[in-house]
Image (cartoon, rainbow, N blue to C red; front, top):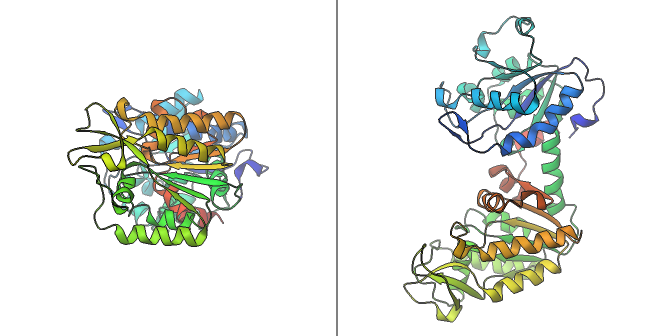
Length: 392
């Protein structure tokens, strides 16, 4: 995989740039600019190199139809503001732009095509459509790691027609994930949560042979607590998971990866109730487990202290209610403390984890925070991502 940062002679080259600008919109207003902010270094680099930039991106799932509410117009305006340069939104049908001099009519150096998913050929990974798109550039750059698990035309097919490179954000993402999957500094610990074990079983199975500790928190910990003979009351749990837990336990023993699950918990009668600390043997049938308890927090902090690398995917409890956010907050504080002392390399990812870190305003205190979602998990599963494979 070649990075665009190392490429020389970019002056006056036309760059076909695939970005993930799939930001949340409410009545044409951007709610969260995080994904836009992350790709600014690549855009600023290309501007400095005096290239002409043609951006491909999407918002939402229009399924090959033009949906006015999913226009990239507000994103185009946001990019203009952040870059301090004019950005032209091309609303014409891409398939009807035959004249290669079409863009000479505009003074702008940055163009953004309207939502690429307005074309059904995009998600169909249509080769002819990719060839058509490739005509707009001299060089293709993928800086959309979070879309790179999709075998779509603008991700997988365009590299067949143009010299292809990775962008700066994609480089950061892959380098960070390599540090927790292949170029590992041990001891390495994974703190993993979420409500369902089945959605992360392949991640867990792929990581156990590489990791020293696997700390199970959140909703999926309830399955472990119940599996080992404790009442979990009305807590959320996934059905029919005993075989999965047996599989995880057997594999962890074989690979000498220590499995840790809560020793004590914080419970309540409902999501808005008052918190109570309980040992596992004390949980009543009308109580819900909503966070980890102090003994468990202390154990996890000790594990973090002995670790050189940390992957965190999934909060420790129902952090949306401050009464049940303490476990997640204490984990975050300890990771940050060790980060500041350069004792640890930390990677966090997954929607809820990113929301938690954003709520606490501590995203910048981690070595890397991934917003990639599906691509993040598939990379951790050891899968080959179509977008990365295409660049290779």
